[in-house]
Image 1: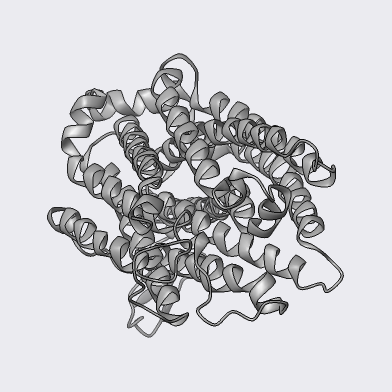
Image 2: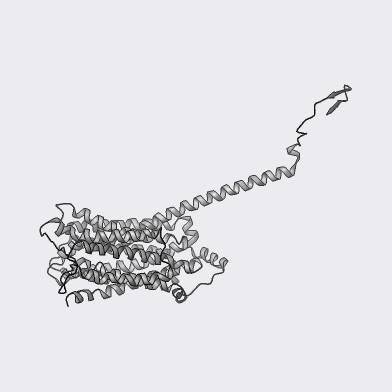
Amino acid sequence: MIETDIDNGTVVQLQPDVLGVLPDRASQPEIKQQETELQNRKDEDKGELKDHQDLNAEIRKIRLIFLVLGILSLLPWNILLNAEGFFRKKLSNTYFENNFSLFLQASAVFSNLLGSFLMFFLSKMFPVRKLVLVATLTFSLPLIVVTALAKINTDTWKIEFFVIILIMYSINAVSHGLMTSAHSILCTMIEPSLLKTYYVGKGLAGLAGSAVALSTLAFPTVDVVSAAFYYFMMMTILTLIGATALIIYFLNLDLVKQRTMKQNYMKEEERSQEELMSLKDITVVIKTQCISGLLATISSLLVFPATLTNLQSVNPKPGTDWTDKFFLPVTVFLVWAIGDNAGKILTEFVNWPKKEMMVWFAVGRLVMIPLTIMTNIQPRKIPIWFNSDVIPSVLCFLTSFTGGYLVNLNLTYAPGYVKGKENQGRASMVMFFFIAAGLALGSGSIFLIPVIINT
């Protein structure tokens, strides 16, 4: 390479540059543009990754909210069921002393069915966001009356006391039907997998109710009436303040607003060009899940709580805490809660059997009804087959485990068979209606159990 200095008139010999003369980067607009585009793509990828991480974090937050809402939605039902000793004492020497659970269960499930039925009409007239807030408030208010009655001496008006309890509990159950339907619709609109978490929460409610009941009964100086007042009060505070505050916070989350406000999800429906299906058409599509959920719920209700709450130990020891306080809360209520919760949690990891086989598994569970009747359910005239305290607990666990698993699986399967956010939300509402119908039919049939075992 030769360089000439014209001013000095000299010629300088230079060694050749083996790499050649590098071009001036600033003078190459094409290269600079490519680098800019590459950097922009990297920035976009980072932005998408951050948005994805933010979305996942928001979904996790909403998942936790629905877990807690699931617990709070069934906590009053489980608390009242665990107050078996309280009701027996409050209703002593009356017709309802040994039959209170039949009437509580019947009033609750028929009111629950009414609430879910009303949701079909109310959801057409009002936004689900408003309905869920109103249902949460009306769900909590009757519990204040129930708590107050636990502290008042009702010895001179036992029947009137129980009638008021039934009325308050019926209002609570109607609100539960509305609230659960609304929760199911909201879950589906945001992320269908949230349904599993929500119903796992409902399973945990039974465990929480048993834990609260056992912890209050464990104090030696606390009688069953005082214990009931304490956990009724806890139930009221948690549902009135906790559930209301949680639902208000949930409805104000940006992702929830984006996916549940009608103008937003209707635009998504238009973009996906999915027609809004009628409730009849949705029912036809998911009929297998509807029938399976209906049968599973009926068989569960005929076993628990009405039948098993009359279980007695084959080796009773009157005067001991185990016989007087803990036998039913542990061998029935706690075992049922554990089984139901385990079944619901299992659906997070196992999705079997598939659609076509669900009905046959639900039919097979019906065998649990005669097997449970053959345990030491009292009073009875027919012979006992299982003269043991262990076998009824095993049957209780198997019934609750399989019931929790099948019902939760059907509830989460159903929305996946229709397309479009609003159609999926309506499918969830239809499924919950059939579950509520199963509760009603099961409760309507439980009056046959005393007739069968006393024939």
